[in-house]
Image 1 (tube, rainbow, N blue to C red):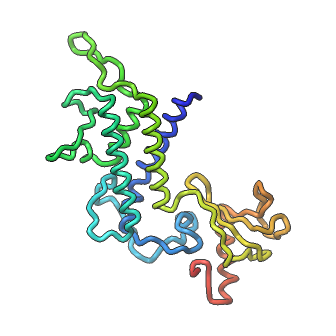
Image 2 (image 1 turned 30 degrees about the vertical axis):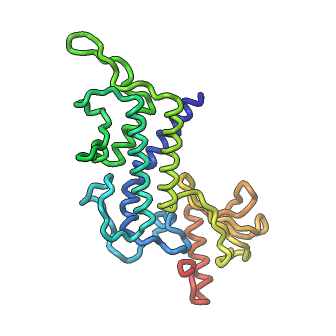
Image 3 (image 1 turned 90 degrees about the vertical axis):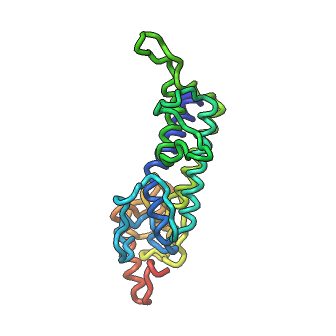
Length: 264
């Protein structure tokens, strides 16, 4: 695969992640940041341990892809992340439009710049900006177009130069990484020194990431008697239903001291 094709693919993937998780970020703005507990937030939906007793948050009654005003945000980091990603995507769209756009003023495919009296295409939100940018990355609408009189009109966009493709890739990946960090979905390795393995007392380590199932590993290795498979490094590893069983085992063991993993 060529460098050009790889850059296109990676940019589109990052923009897709931003679009898919934007609604989650809006919810996070109104949700207090979680304490550093185990199991962590990213495993909550799988383990069904993420409930706080409050009513579930919904986005059905609001525009989920437009960052609205939040007079009392509960999570300032999530709010800052949303504003930063909006700015990154809007500025990138401005840059690409200035370089390759020839669409008529009434063409719905046109990216409209902000003015002192109008937000332009920014009014449609970051989701539309991401879709528009992806279109430029894939060189959509760069061929002459037939008219009613049989003639061909100039294309609304030029192909994206390689240096701007790499700029789009850099910006999209930066936005994706910042979003994943705000939602605590980035790849992480978290030692759990206060929650030893219930089978051998070894140190447990939790591994999480956006494209991998949560996994806990025991430092003892093959000598650990836990009834779970070994990972590629020869350590006992819990994932899936085994991870849920591990949570129950550790909490049961901690019960005698009046603490549990969720208390730490």
